Each structure stands twice: as C-alpha cells, then as structure tokens.
Amino acid sequence: MLIREDVEYTYFNSLNNNITERTILRCEIKCDNPECGKTSYRRKSQAKPSKLHYCNIKCRSMHFDICKIDGCKEKISYQSNKSGVCNKHHDMYNWKTAKSKLLELMGGACICCDERDPMFLQVDHVFNDGHIDRKKRNLKIKDYLKIWNETPERIQLLCANCNHAKAKNGGVLYRPEKFTRRKVQREKIGECTC
Image (cartoon, rainbow, N blue to C red; front, side, top):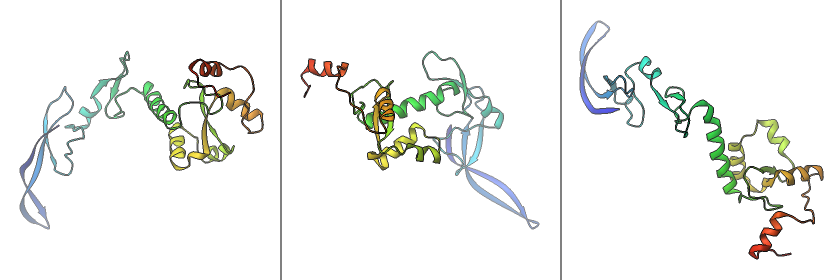
C-alpha cells in the first residue's frame, strides 16, 4: 500500500573512483501482508497504487486469503492467484463467466428447437469446419468468443440433440415434424406460427 510519494533519499555513488552524492525521490510503502505491516522504500517507477507491495519475498509468499466462492474455505496465495478464487474454482469460474457471455451474445437458444437451458447448449460450426480450428489449437470458450466477434456467421448455438442429429444427417440441420415441448410452450403463450 502506497503511503507517501516524493520522499527524498540521499545515497553515495562511487563510479570510476569518484564519490558523488545523489538525492532522488522515492515512495514510502507499507507491506500489504496484514501480518507484517513494515514500511519500505521503492523508486517512483516501481510504486504503483494498483499493485500489491511487499517488503520481501517471504512476506509475499506468506500472504493468504480465503476463496471468494461461497462455502469454500480454501486458502489462496496472492503470489500465484490474483483472481480471488482457489485453484479448484479458478477454471470453473472463468469458464462459467465466458460461457454465459457467449450464450448471451449468440441469442441464448438453440436455433433449431429453441432450447434455452444452458446445460444443453453447444457451439456448432455452421460450415462443418470445426476440425480446422481444432487442428490449430484446443478450442476453449474464449476462442469461441473470439470467433464470434470476428466472424459470427461461422458458428451457431444448437442443443445437444440437434447438434448430434446434424452430425448424423451429414452436416445438415435436421428438423423433425413431431411433438416437442417447445412447440407446446409457444402455443400456450400464443407465439406458434404453425
């Protein structure tokens, strides 16, 4: 934590057998480890208000907090994890937020049967070219966000059933003419255009 800026600091520099006295401005900083609380000095370029500051490496490695997910009592180290969640929840937390953002951008429903439950929704490549992207890298939700922002016509949302039916139908969307739960729900609220 930054306490004060512009503290004068005088030191002697001995270069080429010439001793010169130099005065520079430094910042006084309090260690961010609550168990320590020591003050130290840093150059102005190293003292950033948004950054955590420690008096030494031991203080930094011993600074722990509790995971911010409700019910989790796991300790986290600020040195290795600055997100505020433990390693067990870190990937899940990032994945859930990215997936909800992607589903919101893509309409949040299957384009074939109008399924809206996020548990069943999957990202599908419209032109059946997903193998090209998978050869380049292991696709994650953040990669799909990037693809959606660059070329939204390449991907679409399908539920698991419709995606599987598309794969079995040679890459063409399969829309059966049968009784579906979504059709009944639309009829109840007056949206059915059958």
